[in-house]
Length: 114
Image (cartoon, rainbow, N blue to C red):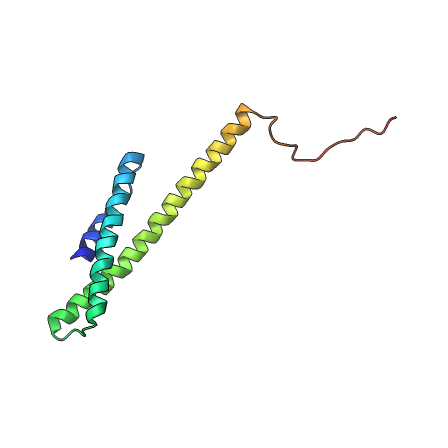
C-alpha cells in the first residue's frame, strides 16, 4: 500500500545532512506521486466499500492520511525554520564582511553651521 510506505518513510526523522535530506525529499516526492495515482484510480472507480474488510481498509487509509498531513506540516515548518536561519546567517555574515554597504539605521545628521 502506497499510503503505508509513505507513512513509514515520514516516520523517519528529516536528515540534517543536505545530500541525505535531498534523497529523503526525492523519495518522499516519488511516494507522494505513486500514492496520488492510486488515489486517483480509486476515485475514478468511486466504489463504496462493500465488505467489512474494505471498510477497515478505507478507515486505515483515512487515519494514515491524517498522520501524513500532520507529519508533512511539521516537516514543512522544520525546513522553513532552517531556511530562515540560513538566510539570517547569510545576512549577518554580509554585515560583517562589508559593514558600510547598508545605509544607516538611525537616520542622517546634517550640520547647519554655514
